[in-house]
Structure formats: C-alpha cells, structure tokens
Length: 275
Ligand SMILES: C[S@@+](CC[C@H](N)C(=O)[O-])C[C@H]1O[C@@H](n2cnc3c(N)ncnc32)[C@H](O)[C@@H]1O
Image 1 (cartoon, rainbow, N blue to C red):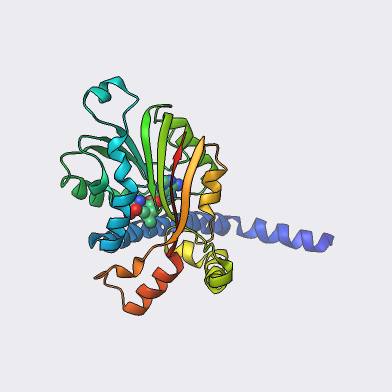
Image 2 (cartoon, rainbow, N blue to C red; image 1 turned 120 degrees about the horizontal axis):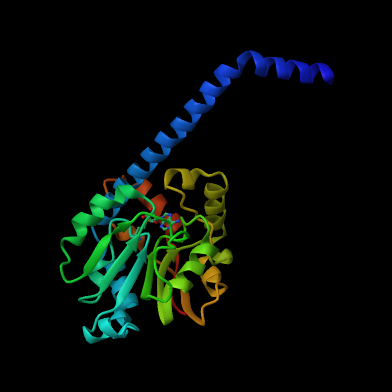
C-alpha cells in the first residue's frame, strides 16, 4: 500500500507542471464548449420559433386571454390601465403577441446569445414597453424588487431551470399580493398506462444526459405541475394536456427528426397560480 502511495506521489511530483497545464486546458475547453452550446441553442430556438404554429398560437391566445382583465397593484400603472409583467427565460420573445397593450415588460434569461433575436423581435411590438434582457437565471433574480410584479410568465423554461424550487420561491417573492403566475411547460408524460414507452424514452434521454446536452440543459422527466402546486401559491389552477407540436413547418429539420422531437415534448402542463 505504502508503495502505491509513493508511486502516486512520485507521478504527481514529476508531472505537476503538465497536470496544471491539462487542468487549465480543460477549464478553457469547458468554457468555450459551453459558450458554443448556448450560441447554438439560441440559434436553434430562433429557427424553431420564427414560423408560428397556428394551433400553439391559438392555445396561447386562450391561455393568456385573462391578462387583459388584470388590474395592476401599482397606482401609477393603474391610472394608465397598464400592468407589469416579468417573463423568465424569454428566449427569442415568442409571447409578445399575447401581451396587453401598454404593459411594462421586464425579462430575464441566462443565455446572452438570445439578445439579438429578442431585440429584433421586440422592435415589432411598439405597443409594449419592453426592457433589455437581464442576463440571469430565474433562481438568481434578486435585482427584481419584491412584491413589484403583477404577472410572471414562463413558457417552456422550467424544464431547463437548474433549481426549480428556488425559481418558484423567487416568483412568489416578486409577485404582488394576488399576483398571477402563468405557465406552459412540457413535462414527463402523465399517463403511464397509455404512454409508458414515451415515459421510458424521456427518462432514458434525460438520465444519460443526451437530451440536456443537446438542448442546453432541458430535462424531459419533470413533474412540473406537481412542483408548482407544492411551491406555496395560495391557489393553482392547472391541467395536463398534449400539445400538437407536430404542426410546426419549415423548421429546416427532416420530418423524422422533427417527429421524434415532437413526440417526446408533446406532454404539457399549463396553468395559472395566484400568490
Ligand atoms: C426552450 S427555451 C424557451 C424560450 C421561450 N420562453 C419560448 O417559449 O420560446 C428555454 C429558455 O429558458 C432559458 N433558461 C435556461 N435556464 C434558465 C434559468 N435557470 N432561468 C431562466 N431561464 C432559463 C433558456 O436560456 C431559454 O431561453
């Protein structure tokens, strides 16, 4: 045993310089690789969202329709008939068309490579007072004042958030009393009798880190509705549904790849939680 210890110490002693160089190289490789991964994902989402699916837009239109009847907790905004919305994980900005006229929009996203797509998109919606992206995760948005937001929106983001509990805690903190959290998220299939195979594929792709590596940390196996219900909102109205993602056209992907992607992300949860 002592001999083994000695040989390890000798190896480290003889090669310390090379080991330090290798560690530094590994650190930079990881940094460059992560940056490339974020860049590719921002571009991929841009490609996937530039053509809007009619069915998804209809579903969103229905889900967000009650936004226009929300009255702000802020007296100044109330005078202008406006509300303050925080969108977490805004990406390219796919929800602008569903926001009420004159609303104030604060957005956060940890991936800085979305900024150019988001900025291009927001110029088309002059009726919304949107701000630049604050580059941070939903778990870390301490710069957003407590009790200052009328509505928080998240679409297809909780699958990627590293610490879902902490993010939901932050949402409750920033919402005004009675404020609403609107969410639409893809989830682990909720029907094990009919879709056990899909659940197994979702679990496999997630456990072996295949899906999270390809799609910037996205997990297919989350039970998001249950997590929102456990988070401490005063009420949660939510449902599970299958979203017809297969209607997206012109994404540039072949039909079989597209079909496979859509099959594993079609189970969704959507709802509105109240603080
Ligand atoms: C699939 S995209 C959805 C983008 C947009 N919400 C939409 O519906 O088109 C996932 C988004 O979540 C963001 N994201 C990843 N981790 C996050 C985190 N911890 N907090 C907030 N957003 C995050 C990604 O950068 C990306 O913009």
